[in-house]
Amino acid sequence: MKTKYLFLMSLLLPPLPLLAHEGEKADNVTNAQATQHKWTLDDCIRHAMENSIELKKSQVSILSSKEDVEQAKAALLPSLNASTNQSFGWRPWNEAGVSTVANGTVVNKVSKTYYNGNYAVNAQWTLWNGNRNHNTLKQNKLTAEKAELDSATTANALKEEIANLYVQILYLNEAIAVNKQSYATSLKNEESGKAQVEVGKMSKADLAQLTAQTKQDEYNIVSAQAETARAKLQLKQLLELDGDTEFDIYIPEESNDKALADIPSLQSVYQNALISRPEIASGQLNIESQELGVKIAKAGKLPQISMSGGLGTSTTSMNNNSWGYQMKTNFDATAGFTVSVPIFDNRSTKTNVNKARLAVIEANLDLQDKRKTLYSTIEGYWLDANTNQQKFKAAQASVESMEASYDLLSEQFRLGLKNIVELMTGKDNLVNAQQNMLQSKYMTILDIQLLKFYNGESL
Picture 1 (cartoon, rainbow, N blue to C red):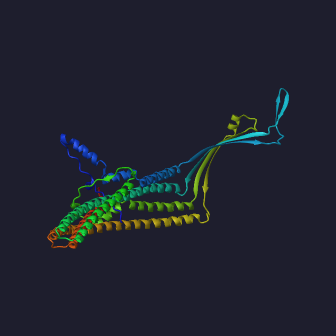
Picture 2 (cartoon, one colour):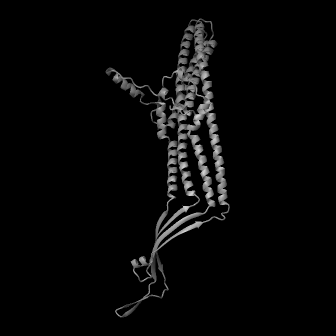
């Protein structure tokens, strides 16, 4: 079944409380407390947007893509690092030493251990690499924008699923009311049948059929209530609510006029959706990103120019000079340019370029598929809206006719002019007509609101 998104804000939000007299304030407080746990569609959507695990994952993807942007920006700057190396050595068979004169005596000292120290600061800066760094930065920015659009697409899908369940609950709620009304009628017929059995105007077999009808209506109520509870559970799970959290939705006073509203034009909705829908914008950004990928791949054929520089010095224990003197005299500074020209890379660059071009083709096909899917979805809503609206109009007339027919059948049954089969058939026809009217009514409202949503209207 298609997932449908419904913004019925004006339909589903509870009415604003009226100012009460002082004597009515206590009653108003009690009523507010009684309805404070009733969730409107707006409440459900807002809570889901803040707590959905799927949306939180998409937010993590957005943050990750933004980190890639910062990394690409940093790649345009020089890199700088400092290093030091301290090493110790041992020469067990060393016989050469250092001779010194102290108080007229020559002292020869042989050291079998020594240490070396090296200290350096190096910088590296890529001046040009076929614009690969700049294009990578542009591509990462597009990826970050695309991540946000993908998150918006996920949010829209979640909203549609929530709205679909919400409307299903509204429909089931009215279906329960219809089944209860049918049960009350069956109970009344059963009581009337018992009275007729007592005076000999009805057989016990016919009474048994009336009793069976009553039990069937009772079963239908329980079944509809179970379906409602299941739909509420699914909605509750979408909202990421805990199992022990109290949950119920607000049931509005729905008018039939909403189902008879004008249906937006198919082509106008589609054209506006091409502009406003995030999945289409995401597909367009994907094409731009893949085109930049081609430029990045082509950079592998071009020379690269980089600049490097460094400062360094060293010390050793094998020198009689002091550590500070060695640091000074051994100090040196270097700077240079490096030009790297690719000659043969085992077809690596050509393969990367070809794959990047194929990715562009795939991105274009993906956008075409999204446009096709979007049109198919909107067309489906438009056809459903027109079909269900016509069904609703016909169902309204059918219910009126069935109600009049059943009232007549009931009177004729009491007079003995109609048998039990005709009475039960008439009642089943009435219940079916009422259910059909409810279903077409809510489906029409849902389809019309979805068309408005895809049209980019403020809801």
